[in-house]
Image (cartoon, rainbow, N blue to C red):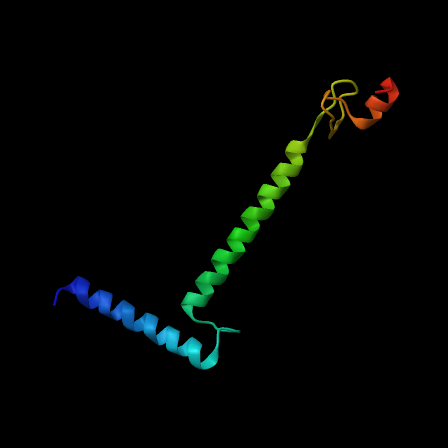
Length: 88
């Protein structure tokens, strides 16, 4: 048997052992490497999603063409306060 085949068999054996562990004891509070990596990946995904949401909120705000303040703008590129002053 080649070294790659032995390594592959060992990896499958580890996966089966982890799977059996989860079937017997459950995943809640599990400290195995598979669950730990899954938690890290989930945390990174949540952080990246929150960053994307923050970036979207920042993109919605821009500098008003009239007063120059950074605010949410309407379709005429003026803020709500300036639009009210002009009576739009």
